[in-house]
Length: 385
Ligand code: UDP
Ligand code: BGC
Ligand code: MN
Image 1: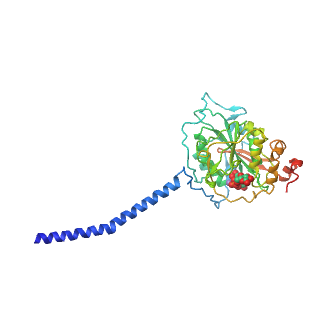
Image 2 (image 1 turned 120 degrees about the vertical axis):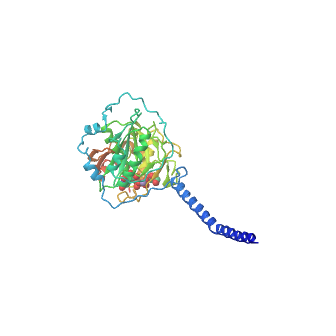
Image 3 (image 1 turned 90 degrees about the vertical axis):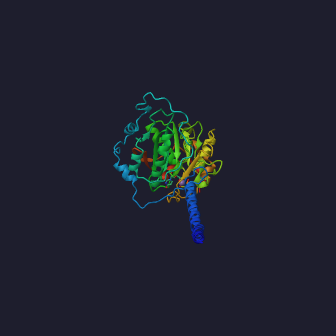
């Protein structure tokens, strides 16, 4: 009887725990599972690089004074202002490298490329970037082999300091991995003239060429970050549109004749189109004009596959000094006819500063809009609004 009673008590206790378990422990377990699954989902969404789910880098306009000026004016190389001195800092002579040694030529496609890479959004100041990318001496060249081409990355620029910092932080290791011998040329258009992106391409081409006859020119928006390391920063016989798939446009091409963002030209092909037009002040059309010049010179624009030509664009607003150009469509009508009379051979600008830092070559220029219009072929610009 006692036994039986004891047994009864123990059964009651057991059923109490079973009820407790089903009521609370199972619920807690299920809730934990839900929490873990949510965390995993968030991690996957923010890191996946294959299906267009990149975290878009937001343009954080910080309330701080611009540090570009401070960086440039305090840089230990600031006194190297002649082309000869700058060439020496870059480790170049007029026709080659200071000491090439007996290195073998780099492979056409480096072996260690991995495909999709994640854009880094962390913001650094220029001094931190110099420390992080200590192999930069105004230029970078691989230590283990001799690159096939010397590449100038031309960045048309005005007042996008945050973008420039992010671009440098991303592109330097990206190009190191690709074994590119490169110099970044930032072409700054001084205020107050309306921004003229294509003219800055020409200035970058001409100023870089005074230092060294670079083989390859990559004209690069400051807010585009390459996110596939198989997108090789080199130049082939034909101009190439390198930024076909941008996250802003859901990685879809914006049209068969798109030629904005990032484009590459060999020295010969850029000379062949007489560079870009100098007449596009404000936003739009200058890239379409350049596309027509390529086609009008018996060349074609080539592209690499969508899976490779991938970029992330830093979000930004339209710049005040770069409003939509109302003349762009009229100018486009005679892009090919103007080609030989508007470009590298007619350009006028005033170079205010040419300076090299560990990270880039800085070309600061003044553009006089009135003067440029005087250089325009009158017969082909009569109908402008
Ligand atoms: N840009 C600049 N400052 C300006 C306007 C334009 O540096 O005030 C340069 C910058 O390299 C930028 C490029 O010109 O990426 C193209 O301009 P924007 O980004 O406004 O054109 P989008 O391609 O975004 O329409
Ligand atoms: C403009 C180009 C621009 C493209 C994509 C065109 O209408 O003329 O300059 O790159 O749109 O935004
Ligand atoms: Mn942009």
